[in-house]
Length: 150
Image (cartoon, rainbow, N blue to C red; front, side):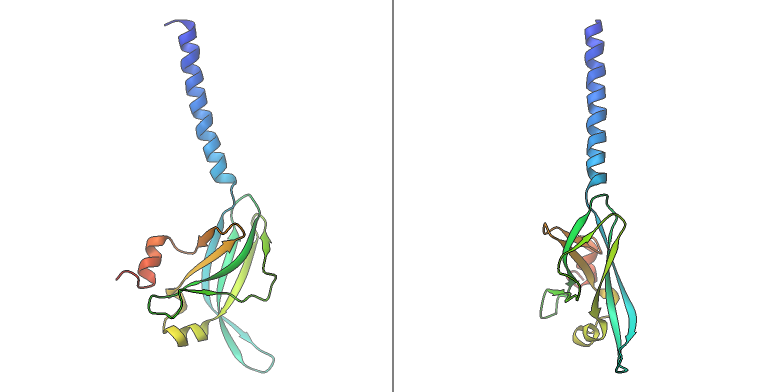
């Protein structure tokens, strides 16, 4: 082999390594939201009423800031509606920077009364301004958890 052949092989190897690194950097540097769902958050109102809330927590685990527009729950199959969106008292658009989180609250007692399911039987989602959906569970778990597959 000539020297020019070796330089060509070296250039091909180096270009492939750099392409893989750039793909890795792209995946690492994009916005990514981790969604958690929790229950049994109890709050006592000034009038003495006790409210139990279901909490949807959105955590920005990516490197880019992301602006959230809304959050909600995917409802079970036999429910009247497919999604239940949060009516949050905070501004509609909320920017999360790296490592920051935000909690959305839903009335857990009302959910149990209407659907007969505890809070751990729901799947939560958070939607950003670009209409990208971030879920608390993967797609297959959502199907089994909500009774869409038995």
